[in-house]
Amino acid sequence: PSQVYFVLPDGNEYPVDLCHDVVIGRQPREDDPPVTVDLESFDGHDLGVSRHHAMIKYIKNNLVLVDLDSINGTFVNGHRALPLKRYNVMDGDTITIGRLTLEVRFNKRNRR
Image 1 (cartoon, helix red, strand yellow):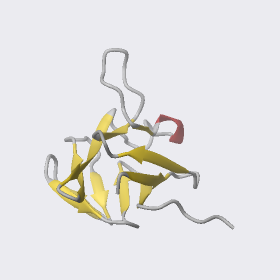
Image 2 (cartoon, one colour):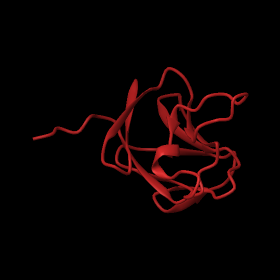
Image 3 (cartoon, rainbow, N blue to C red):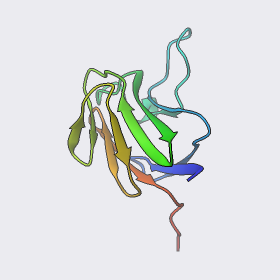
């Protein structure tokens, strides 16, 4: 896919373009590189989300997640992702960033 959707804790879908690396974390300090998916407004700090927690890349037709050596860890479908290792992510998978869970969707859900 050229775009994925993260289903956020409030149920909203956050579209992300995969032309660039996707950094998941929370609001960076002034001199830090930006994050793509900012979880600050979902109590990210209190729920253990690092400023630069995890990255998602599109590599050779695979969506790959890498934990960026976060303090509180990243989990894919409940399994801990080791820091700096690559994990394939599929449509419908859950990613837990600290203690905050997102769902990955390759297509926007049809709302009725």
